[in-house]
Length: 93
Image 1 (spheres, rainbow, N blue to C red):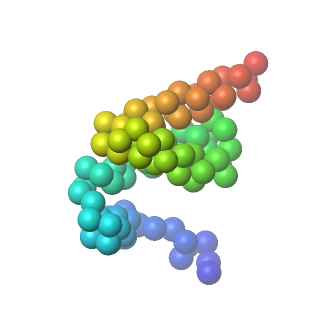
Image 2 (cartoon, helix red, strand yellow):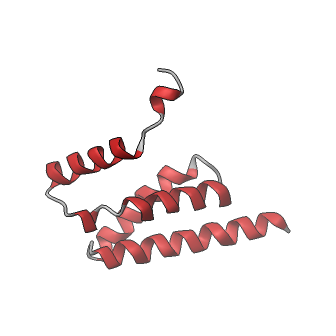
């Protein structure tokens, strides 16, 4: 697999999200692509790249345990981004 074949264009990401929504009976609001990509970016930059997918998993786990609503997802993501930003600030001292 080449590096270029591992890059997913936006329309392919939308298609993949659609497949996931269909398979798991989710709404578009249940799958906030931009929010999760921003989470991954913030954690990758503030902590480390390998922490990004792990953190996305934890956000889903936390949100699910809190009830699983879109608001629960946003709250979990916000808490993890806050931790990542704090981690990055600590690393600059």
